[in-house]
Image (cartoon, rainbow, N blue to C red):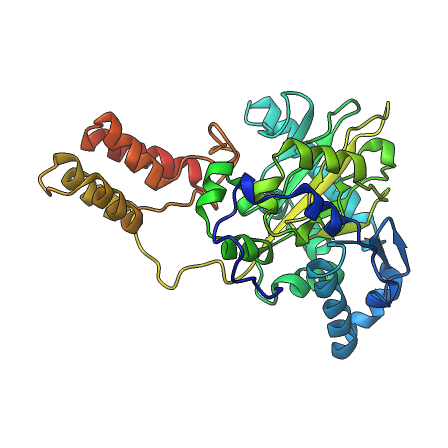
Length: 390
C-alpha cells in the first residue's frame, strides 16, 4: 500500500472523487521492465505464455519470481494480466463445459436457474460452480482445478491457504454489456454502505479477493470479453467513484478488451474498474468460469453461534424492559448478530434490493421495526439459515 496522506479523508464519498486525478492514474503506461517474464503487453495488459511458465513452477525460486511479478503488477502496475494457454490440455475445459451445460439445463428445468446481474434470459449463470462441478464429477474437478498456474496466480495475490469459489457466466449473442464496477468485497455494497467504511478499509478490500476467469471458448472482442481500465485500481476513492456518471463515461471512453482463447486465464485486482462486454456476435456463446478467490485471513478468531444468540436477545430488546436507547439497542445488535450476508448460497439466497442478500443483523433490526413476535423472528431466522445452506 502507498503511504497514506494524513490529510486525506478518513471516509470516501462522492465529494472525495476527482475525475482529473482519476484520469491521471489511468493515463499511465505499463513499463515493460516491470514485467520481464511477460511475452507481450497489449493495451497495458501483460500477457504471459503458459507453456513458458509451466516448467518454472517446479523451481521454488522461479515460481516465487513469477508470483512477485504478478503481485507487483496487480497492486502497483496496470492491475491485470492474461495467461495464454493456462491449460496445456483443454480436455478438462471441454469436460467441465459439458457438465456445466447439464447443470444449467437441470436448474432451468426445476426453475432454480437465475442470474441476478442480468435481464432474465440474457445469459446463464451457475452459482457455486466449484462445488457443483466437484459433486458432479470429482475426476473432472481434479483435472480442471488441479492447475499449478492458477494456484500460483491466487497465491501471488492472497498468499497460501486461499479459498476458491467460482461462478459460470454464459452470455448469449446480443447479451448486453455491464456497467463499470469494482468487485467483492466493497464492490458488493451500496454507495451508502461503502461510505460507512473508513478509507483504510477501502484500501484493504482489494487485497482480500482475487478476481479471475477461465475461458471455456474462443472469444473475440466482438464476443464481449471483460472490459478493463488499466491502473484504475490505484485510485483510492474508487469504490465511491465508479457509480458516478463522469467516471462511468471515462471508463466507456478508455476501456480495453483482449480476445481470449479456450484455456486462457485472466486475473485482475478486484478494485480495477471493469465490466462484462456486449456480445455482438451472431453465434458465439461466451462461456467463462469466473473466479472469486478469498484470503485465508477473512475470518474471525472464534466460532460463535450467532443464530442462538440472536434468538435469546431478540425478546429482551423487543420488550423494551432493558430501558436502552435506540443507539444502545443498535450497538447490541451489532455485537450479537451476523452483520455480513456472505458467504451464502446465491441460488437460494439472492440479493434483495441491491447487491447483497439481507443479513442476520438487518433482519433483526427490521423485525424490531415491524414489531415482529419472537416466534415469527425465530421462523425468519430458520428460513434465512435454509436459504444460506450450501
